[in-house]
Every structure is written in C-alpha cells, then in structure tokens.
Image (cartoon, rainbow, N blue to C red; front, side, top):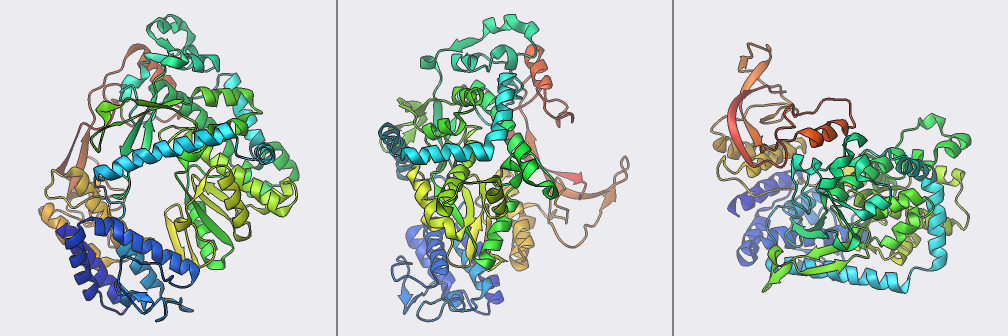
Length: 628
C-alpha cells in the first residue's frame, strides 16, 4: 500500500509541475482517505471520480449530483482542484480552451490503479455470479416472449445478407467440404487437458458429428487412423460437459466472468472463427473498390469490423474528438447479452455454417457454488441452460458478437436514412463506422437510433463510457480530448518485495517503460531507483525488442562486452525464464499437431512435442543478454 501511495505522489508532483499547480493538499487528502477506506479508495473511489469527470467533459459542465464522495466548494470538487481550475470555471462550466495536460493529469491520477490485479471481496464475487444468473434469466424471458419486433428481425437478416453474404457463403462451402483448420488455444479447458494433452482427444460430441465436424476428419491426422475412434467417447447432447463459469481478475470493483469450454468444442470453435475472420478481413486494394468489385467480393473490404488490430478504432476515436462527427459507444456485459436466437438469424441462410456454429456452441453452464458468502468451485452444483450465444472463453464469442453488433448498427442506420442499404450507401460509411468487439464507432447523427436498436435486441449501452456530445472519445484503449492523447498509464500489479515475485517484477519494469514513453521522466526515474535496488544495480538501457528486463530510452544502450560466438554486443541484465512443464506427445497426437499447423514457419519451440502448457515455474536470473 505504501509503495502505491508513494508512486501516486511522484506522479502527482510531476503532473502538477506540468500544469503549474500543486498537488500537496491532494496527497494529504489521499492519505486520509486511504487510511479510512483502504485500497478501495485507490481502486474504486478514484475511478468513480474519473467517471464523473469524463461525463462533465462530455456535458460541458459539472452536474450538481456528480462527485458525491468528494467535498466541493462552489461548483468544483476540492480534491485535485488545482487541475480542475484549469479545465472548468468557478461555477463548473467547461472553459473555452481547457488545459489538456490537466485533463490527462486528472485521468492519470484517478485511473492509475483501476485495473490493478488484486482479489475482489467475497461479496463482490457473489454479486458477480448473481448478476450472471440475472442476465441469463432476462435473456431466457426475452427468448420465450420474443420481445424483439418481428419486422426488426427481418431487417436484421437482410442487413446481414448484404454485409456478410459473400464471406458467409465462402465459409459455408468450407464447412461442407470439411476444409476448416481447427487448432487449440493456449488456455485451460473444462476437461482439464493442458498443452499437448489436448491433441489426444478422449471425447467428441454427437452434435459435432451431425454438423459435419467429424472426428475422423478433424481429430485424426488422416482417415487411415479410422480405428482410433474406438478410443474416443462420443457424447450425446444430454451427456455433454457444461462450460465452467469462472471468475478472473478485472477490477477490484468487479471480477470478469469467463466460461471454460470443453477441449473438442474449443478446438472446432477455433476452426470456424479463423475461417470467418479470414474471409471478413480479406484485404482488398482501396483504389480497386468500385461497384463491380464490391458485388464480387462483398462489403467486408470496407473494413466495418476489426478482429486483429485496434488501430483503426483509435484513429477514428481521435478523429471524433477533433471534429465531433463520430461517437464512441461501449456495451455493458456485451458477451453475456448476445441472445443465441439472434445468432441463429444471423447465419440462417447458410445452413452448413449455421449448423457448425450451433454444434460447437456449449448449451449449458456449471456455476460455482457458495460456502456461506464465499464462491467455491468445489461446490458447483447449479447447471443452467444457456439462452446466450456464449460467454467470454468461447473462441467464437468475440467474432460473432462483433458481427451481431455491426449488423444491428447498419440496420439502425438504414432505418434512420429511410432508405434501403445499397453498395453505394455502404461505401459512403467507410471510415465512419467501425466495430471491434463491444467498442462501436458510428456517426453522431445516428446515435439515438443505434442505441434504441441495440437495446431492442437486449443489449445494454454503458452510458458512463459512451461519448458523442463533447470533445472526449475513447475506444480500444485510446482516449482522446480534442485530438490529444489523454490515455493514462495503469498499474497492473502491486510492487514486488524480492526477485522471487516474478510477475510483479516484470509488471514493474513494464510500468516504468510505459511512464517513460508517456513523457513522465521524473516518475520513470523514481521507478528506476526502486527497480535498481531490487535488481542489485543491474538495470541497463535496452531496446523494446530485447528479452532482458531493462530500461527503454531514447539514449543508446552501452555494450559491456561482445559475444565471442555471434560478435554482438551484450549487457549484464536480469531475464525472466518460464519453465514449461514436460508434456510429451507422440504417435497420432504428434502427427495431428504437426499437420494442423496453418503457417509454414517452424514451431517456435523446437521441443514443442516434449513440453507444453502454462509455465509451472518462473524465475528471474542474471545473464549476459543482447540489448536489442
């Protein structure tokens, strides 16, 4: 706690210098509040302050009901008042030319600890599970009552056909021809298989078989190993493993809920997901876009949806903060609110693809139980039938939700225009509409109807993180005010005590370098001193591509010796080593893994058939390392 408060003071003093003010009284206030409230003041109360501050920027004035947890004088809160005076006048009205450095300072000082990885209280974890159940009950009611108007659903389907018809048709043919390239993800699975173990399937489902996702085609290296299916259990729908609902750190206010999928389901989800993303993001030269080409390759060339890069969203958010023409919208509980019935409508006209998507979707979820008020995974007795399409953890969750959201957005735009969507109309929205996960960017004039249609489909727009009236915008980790970058550097973990705290040490070095490149050199120098003590004096300058834990800088590195074998410069630095557990794979599983590799590049680890899975132990050792 003391180290976090010391960091806050260093950051506050440096930013106060930038803004020609003082943060001395602010730090004293911070000390009193932390002593009374504990770490929750840093991780919950300060982010609440930031939320009210951002709403005030968007509205152009401070609302009388905002900043309720902080004392005010006239129209402004006293806490961080020196910075606020450079942004608002004494009555709380936004200045014509507010100080951008002060805006960055307030966001940095209030959001710095929002996502620090600390365990939530038992009560907050229990509320998160209760919220998951409540959302599922709401979706079940919407599904049974068919609350989305029928005419809106028909428009949704027509828009999907126009937007994604060519891409879906190509993937549909791949499913029919059994040309998918499934793979395993790096995470855990519900049946507790890790790393190489996943390639030796012990279970497959009848639903996958009936959808043409045959074990013989995808679970074996070739059909000559047909007899091996005798060692695999084929599960009927009633015997399938439910996904395991699990809590993982997000913020101290609330944890993130994910669902751990069975191995065979995750495997085929990855294959369908890869095929969809490949077709939707297929590059097309911009100077080639014309009526005839669009009719051949489809609208995905226009880039309305992104899956790999967030840069386009950030660029458009910056543009929106400058000219006020683009809005940034954010959804709450986005993954958990996508109704499976709407996904069925999205793919309905492509039967093979639709059946494959539904067959690889888990239909039940096992929730953790409770011992008193504490969440317990050993008491997981409640199994829910899922009305949602999928929670985070499914490989299809992210791409499918983005397709649903973008289809709803263009359905709303068409109705606002009171004209059918055509290729020419869609082309006019290139660079004006973009969806990446639940980060949505649309022209400001369409915001009311887009929000109304999203809510008609059971989705929930997060009003606290959606902006369209002022000069503040945020999307995909890029926060802007009037075109200026005002994204804070965030602390990921508590400070380490020794080199044995491997994750904390790595996080602290990364934090130091982020502060450095954010221009906060005094704070970076303070962290240099902290890290140098832990590193026993070995903290050299390195480039960002180096494997060594070192200081990134605009200054060049200084070589301490030259490698006698490779004749490259070396520095004495600490390096992180993650010990991958022994996990040998041979025979059919090894052949399947090698033949399933999509890239022609060799495996990164030449011993990948001998070891795999999450690191069983990590350490930091002093080595001679290349500084680049």
